[in-house]
Image (tube, rainbow, N blue to C red; front, side, top):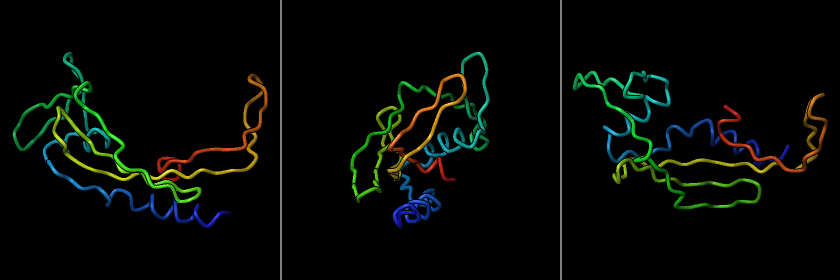
Length: 127
């Protein structure tokens, strides 16, 4: 296996510690959503903030992540994203991509078999 693959796995293992938080209130909203600590009602998806004893609803039209920097190191790519909600920059996080080259068999009986020569792995794929 390519040595960069092992570097990729190591970087992904520690990825949660590579977040810079600028607005803790917004960060809590989105981190709770990722952890599955949200509920739904007639208005939509919300997180109940115990500190202020209030439901905080998500408006995904106001949320965006912008790719601000990309560094390619052969088969490994480091990507920096700035996260915004309602125009407020609340965090910056890193992500890694590993480009694996080889021959990969895919498909099933119904779809038929096929070969691929490239696959892209994200941190979510190796956690």
